[in-house]
Length: 140
Image (cartoon, rainbow, N blue to C red; front, side, top):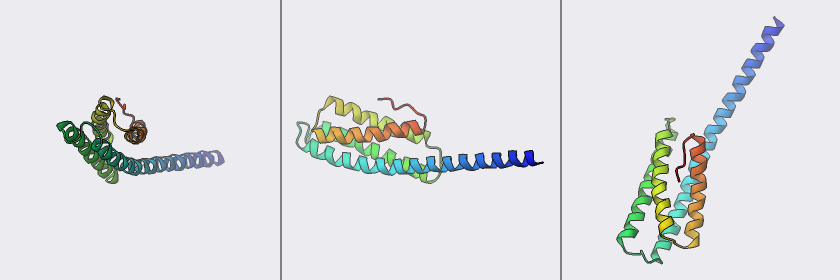
């Protein structure tokens, strides 16, 4: 009987520890999404400043990157809403990463000021952590 009680106590303790880890993991994703939002906002501002002092200012190319950024921001908002509702985020994460890939491709082609590059690198670090948390591939 003592042996059975010990086993039950161990099982209960393991379940408690694992549930705590799941809660911490959820909290980590929540913090990461908030951080991604803040870093994306900073990137968007530096991008606008970088574009204003670049050869693409006032061109269709500027409109193109602004459209990519808007789609990226919209997809991140959807991801956050899904997360807040406790829904599965894998598809939303993949959409965010796909939108980010368009921005990344643009920034490789059009070199803007170093602040834009630094701010984008910070966003990419967040995206990499997000991809790992959801076991999806970053793709760029």
